[in-house]
Length: 107
Length: 119
Image (tube, rainbow over all chains, first blue to last red; front, side, top):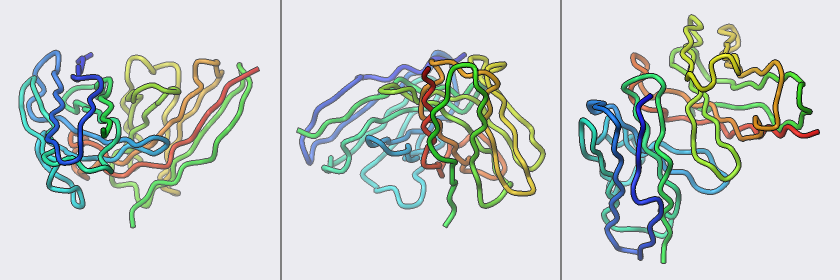
């Protein structure tokens, strides 16, 4: 299985800050990477697909980049509603493994 | 509005069988199943294309669960023949974004089904 490793495991930042979360794959996955946001007690929501594409309705402050093995999710200006856990998922090879998650807290 | 509607929370005893459902608005996209154990992260279990029941499993779940679908009612299922306490979790179904590929993530999620297995 491809291992997905996210860092950091948790991060605390203030409203307006820029936050970057990284995701590393144990082998190359081209651009087949998705990012999800999950708030407590809720289902995950798709934030980014194909490493850098935003689904309709996702705010433009979310940006994804990377290819191969190294990927980043950047939130350009943190908002209170961005407090959540973020997961990456590779969709290049079965099984479509998730990262362990990054918990983002607003100071 | 596209949505996936999952069956309700259940409490079962170890050794019992269970089948939970996920009703979609159509059968034209892959449906995935994801486990989330209490306080833990997301785990990809497998997926099915309801149109022809083509199914892919994670090796971690192969043989432990059965994924199936009934195309006539646009519903996917996740089934256990003998539950264990370690199956206690919330299970999500989710629809794949792209109708022609399963490689672009899942954009519509069900509300989750909480399964509690306890004696």
